Length: 174
Image 1: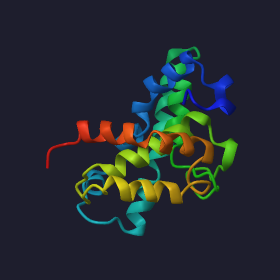
Image 2: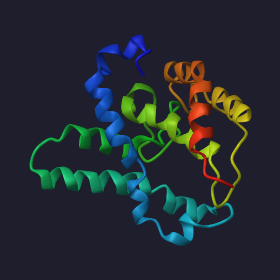
Image 3: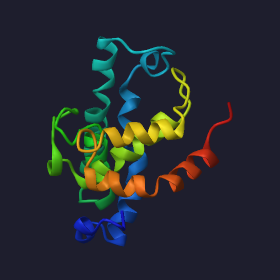
Image 4: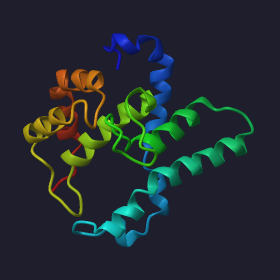
């Protein structure tokens, strides 16, 4: 994020620290998704996907409730709410829950979108094996300007080896 001159004014150290602190809440809305869907060993059907897609709004609503309980603006909760709600939006506008496109997607959510897809596809899940990292790089590059902000993805791919090293180091044992 520090290598994005176009976003330098929006990504000072304090903002990056706040985004990093709030990013782990990106999928908090999955607490509202039934375990039978979350733990399903095979592909989800269309009805199950409809339910799964609600996790973004559920998470944002839960964080908005925490903001209301705080009685004041809490910076990291603002980022957390944007990330939770919008990390499945797509640069081309075909994402969810709001169909936002391009710069209308909050910057923190655009950053999270890349990290989330990298993590999901490079990690073993109950329903799939991890994707080989070189295949994943090809997949991510193909989504430039479609799923992902082109500038953000370019920087991510320029440092892809660093992210692969982290993924290897933190991978769950088979």
